[in-house]
Length: 421
Image 1: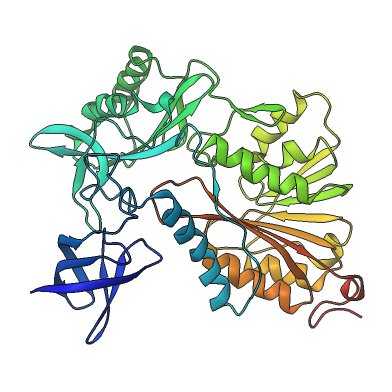
Image 2: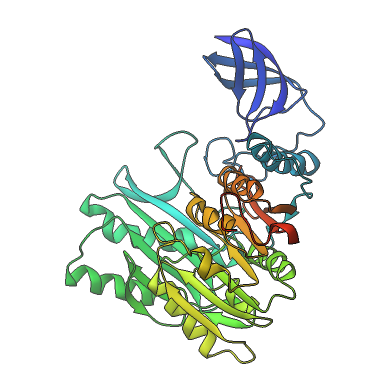
């Protein structure tokens, strides 16, 4: 049923929110201050038309915006966009009962996204690659994407060529493409086991498509050139499908905040270290102990460190920090601890930091909600949240990174909440 609504604010996922007679109504692609006509079903509204447009509305960059589910906010002008993303962090902290200053949003889009995962399906008998429609499992085929870095311009075509060799076997695929110094690095997921004939076909395709590396479920089929990424002073070859920050500018921005916060620390623990975006930079100024559950990622870090001059001692440890977080006696030997956990956060590790004497903790998070939950643990233990910086490397989406700096006042350095005397 079509209704006329007045949008009052933006929600955490970028939907315009109107106050309906039975509660809030969420209308994608509507902006605060706008009067819109929408078809309303419960708390969801489908935008039909904008009757009164906001001055903060801008033309979308991509013709697929509104159909493709990859972006939520191409229609939002920069000033409102920056305030909206910052407010996501503010609201997450407020929900956790934390009041603190939050810095303005740092734009870390740079040249664009350097890694992307395409979905591949058969549509009318032909291979198609793209992204899913919003709130749907329907594939939206794409030929190009404006938020991708220039080095990924050919990635959709190359992913489609690979998919055409596999999709007739009847399984939907995910194909991750990463821009590297050596060219495109691609990893195919979803196929399952492949016979020798298909493997050889894919190897030949990698040559034809001039890929740096091609992998199948993380197993390297061919590496023609090292698919390296620069991390501070080092060149790192991550494992197939391995994690990288979404943009090179994003990694630089996050690393700059981390290294600045650690200035003066002589011994730093880098937890959830991955293949070393922070550890390799920190090792220029301090001894570093890097801890990560992925042995292949740490092996990549170690290889890079061995081939990089001017680093202080850098040690590594394979350890599941969700099941076996570093304990207070282990943490107490460090001057600073850096955490960069996955979206689930680092609750178990935060509780051990709260019980420790470590004077400085820097939390890097891709989820403001779990960041705030873990921050509450540290704040309740007497640590002070002295700086919070939101960083935007997922332009036009609702995702936002957060860097938080926690210090322990002198009177609390020997006692955390419920901790040791």
